[in-house]
Length: 196
Image 1: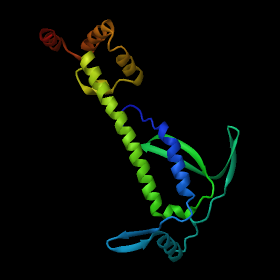
Image 2 (image 1 turned 180 degrees about the horizontal axis):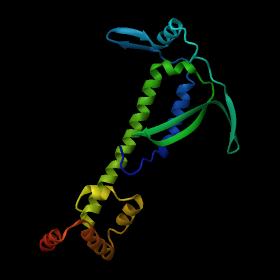
Image 3 (image 1 turned 90 degrees about the vertical axis):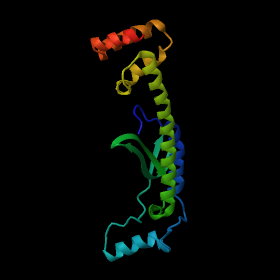
Image 4 (image 1 turned 60 degrees about the vertical axis):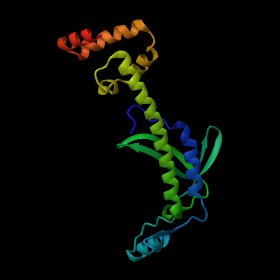
């Protein structure tokens, strides 16, 4: 989704709070209506496990643990929030849920909460990507890169250097010469010189 970096640090505390609240919810909603028919997702799961005689019961509450982190004692069921984009791990955080309710996993509430979290992350990435697009535009116009892909291939540090020095005429002139030598043939160089 985002070319350069995905920074959702400011969202993580609220995401974890929402997940903790959700996973400890006492009376989640299990019923869903589809094609004018009502289904109870929890009952459906229970019926399937009973019918197929499944031994693994996802309704059993996992063991609660107690940890001391930064001088604070935290107890609850250990859970993990992970964000992957294109099979790349972006964020991974452990958190603990006191009064964990395993049946929440079969509720409508989990779907709506996860959808809200996904929308928040997408909006954050979209905002970040818009900034990157304008930075790309500035770098291309200032330094004379021949193609957007040349800018996208730059490392983060190099991009920062270009953006930081965009008003330094000597730096810009020096970099424009280097970029022309790197990306343009002699004939293209003549055409550019005649055009300037």
